[in-house]
Amino acid sequence: MRSVWLPRSFAVLGLLALNGCFLFHRHGNNNTCNDPQPYANARSIAPLKTPVGLTAPDTRSALRIPDLNEPSPPPRTRADPCLDTPPPFVVPKPVKPPQA
Image 1 (cartoon, rainbow, N blue to C red):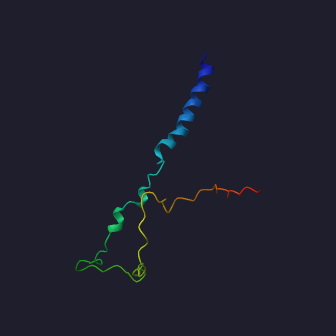
Image 2 (cartoon, one colour):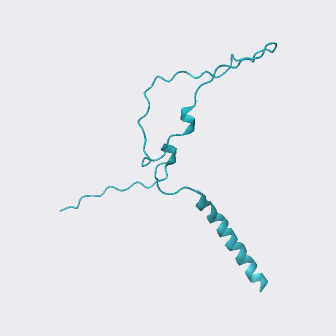
Image 3 (cartoon, helix red, strand yellow):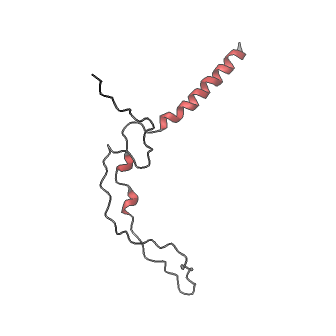
């Protein structure tokens, strides 16, 4: 009797474990990626100041970020899909008009 319940219990536990990931993903129109993000308000800080008696680090090969001279993109609403969401793979077929 025990040998019958053991495989069944492993199968049930396996199905629950595989289905558990589904519960943690966002579903529906919860596009929170279009909401204002905290990093968008980040500001640059002053260059590193070294104390007297220490040598400053070599910054010749530091990454220099150029100024952005382009207009900002149009605002996105929560109804718009996230930019990192892939497009749907199913393309609706065009409806052919009925022939007379």
